[in-house]
Length: 119
Image 1 (tube, rainbow, N blue to C red):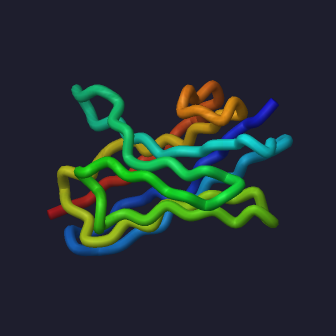
Image 2: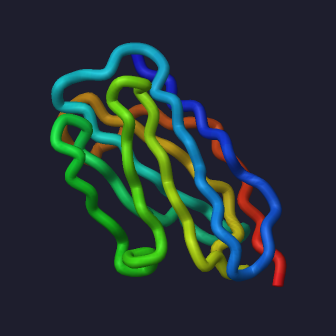
């Protein structure tokens, strides 16, 4: 059983940076994959990035490539999302998700953390 727990959300101004954290409590597995998603009011959940735990290989949605960086600290069982040049359209609830099947079929989700970007 894995329970992702997000932290680090808040209110920032346009152009600011913010780093989100996700603690992967419980076991992590050799074929662990973790990802970040977000959901803005009235919109569907959007994939942002995912990372292969064993290798550190990262994959991004085109919408955030070059602005957001996903990373992980295996020793601490922590994953991060560094977000730069934030804009009001980045306002959303950000979710951390985990998969222990080696795929992006994420079966474990956090409760989400609110990010609000003011103009």
